[in-house]
Image (cartoon, rainbow, N blue to C red; front, top):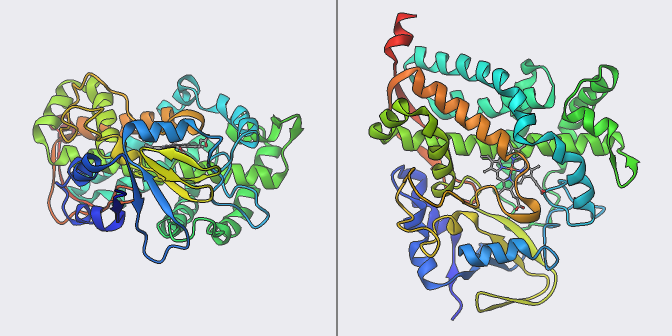
Length: 403
Ligand code: HEM
């Protein structure tokens, strides 16, 4: 029998309970079925959800039947490339983008990112009591993205305002995934981005926007409009997700003084902690695909034209894949997870995100002797699991006090 799942309702208790975990939230559902019918109040379309690790990877592999072209502009082109594009359009753009993202390329930003992290950690430690979300996890990824895009760091408030506007819209697209939801904020930011592109044309430098200007897709150069759209795509893809990953990791640490001390003593294990955080508190819990041809998945018949949620959050706590999935265990043997997606659309920015996270956590732990939650935490749980408010009490490290 088909199981019905009301995602927003089922996940809501995580919003106000910072100790509640996704493994418990998905446990009963995963025990019942690998694929469920999704109930979305007032939705214009029918949704399924691929919940288990096995079914999710099946959908992500089957890009011919499970299209990413969900949200389009009025002329039918994908609203965001490469995220909402299918091959062959996707392949050409991905080829252009790929060389900007390997670890050795993003690694060149390490010193610049550390400078930002140190300045921001010093400020919150000096304040002693802060809302970590407002003062760190929201602005930090935007400042890093300015560095990555080769725009003056002082521009970060412009980027920030834009991504917050998109953030507010993204939560409502389940009811009508084909609506042109990004049109207005895109129009507002486009003149600023065009100026950035013109500046890059006049003052060429070795960065990602330069690669859009000088590179080709399928043997042709890109128009200014395409370059602006690609740049906006980078601003969007890299923000809410990194903000969420950072806040979720810091929330875990703030609630676990033993883990903090262990990582202060063994900072080389910080990447294991951030990977475990990405698995257990997956930032992008869910994205969508459109089914193009009738198919069977997890015992259910999915018809052409129906929509499928690719639910990374449940797959990452699937007990069939991860023993004791609700345990935050940095010593876990299997360190793989699906938080960065899988296959054709696997996250391009994952090495940059890992660098952002590692440096921020290294500096936070090194410059404090302890930090803890000292007020009400407000999370939002689905389709992005993140923290909107996190009052923290921070105690400076002995070495930092001497300075
Ligand atoms: C912790 C932070 C991040 C998480 C959890 C994350 C998660 C994801 C996920 C799940 C996908 C797959 C989408 C799909 O299957 O349709 C994706 C794609 C993508 N991500 Fe990330 N992301 C993060 C950071 C970043 C950063 C920093 C950037 C770039 C600056 C970035 C750029 C992209 C792009 C361009 C795609 C589309 C790839 C394609 O469609 O071929 N991401 N990301």
